[in-house]
Image 1 (cartoon, helix red, strand yellow):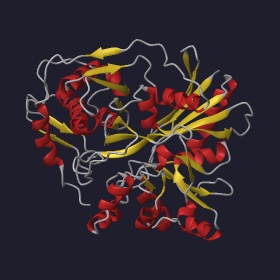
Image 2 (cartoon, helix red, strand yellow):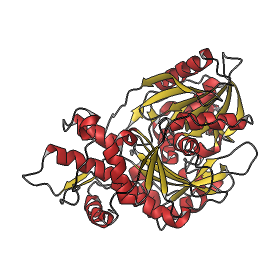
Image 3 (cartoon, helix red, strand yellow):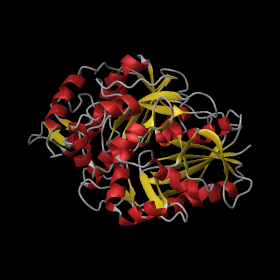
Image 4 (cartoon, one colour):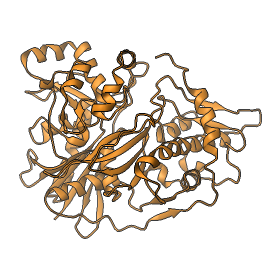
Length: 476
């Protein structure tokens, strides 16, 4: 049986075909536009996203796929007409922080204890609930359609599924990213809905992750077997399906997840959130802990756009003494600080600049900053997921050997990089296969391993000093 996986991510859409023999081939790839219409605003064109997803589906059908898995951006939301499927406004992307003032008012009122207790999440513009509230407050057509009972607002997957299978639905892993779902029950939570002022009737129904969603419109032989958040798809794709399995995906941001079994274990004191990993059919929910770093590859792209380097090969360079050991640190808080700080007042920071600082020093410090922020998150994971010797990673930065080696040294773990790097698409396909009772083998590729040559974990304390100086710069 041929199974396709689609990864609809922050910067683009990719699709792969996977065979039960372990073979894999790319079917489709396209980037979409990023819009920044104002400070702290990040938007996508929902019509463009849907066009790319539809093209990926066409490619999968043409290649003979029978089962399809779809991974989505997570917290990104789309408002649309429930009857026609027409979007009402640009998609508000997970990076968007226009709701920071609203979120701060809730925090000052003591609401964060409720979101931690019921959703397993801190209060942050990152999650979907405040974005949905913004749509209800600021998009006139949304208010009109709500009065008519035609308003649909949900994570981007609900918009895609409305067009692909004709159902206004989401899955439990994606719903767990909204701050509106009760983490223990897997259902929309009345107290959270009231807190954010979101009416339940505008939200999609919550289904399992691996589940027969339906036949894809226009393709009677193609069934959608899974819908899942991209990071959870990558966790499954890495094979982290038992408690303790840990991965980091280095995409636009860096997202660390560790499987924790059938019990949600958020840790507000450590700033570690809990999330649904997936739900397979009628089996119990499975959970993970999650720690997001908002800027990873996006920080490198920013440095490249400044002219600090042209090609990623230029920054894949080993060095004896690290930039931080020489006193130069970069805090990649260009969109604020995620886990464990959850601080949108933080700003990107270089500290330790001097007349002798060279362009290559700046580039090295950016790479180190992303690795060190990720190491901060993993250090907080240890109490909940346990210490593991292996760390599985994927994403663009996983191709940078110098970065991988430094990450191994500041985490004290062996970093493993699968030869097949698009683990999100594979995870979506593997979950879709699981939904129909199959076990899809991973693409047969050699795994690269980077073992710590030095123990640089002591650098975290010095880096923490730089992080503290980056905080409180932006008004909230």
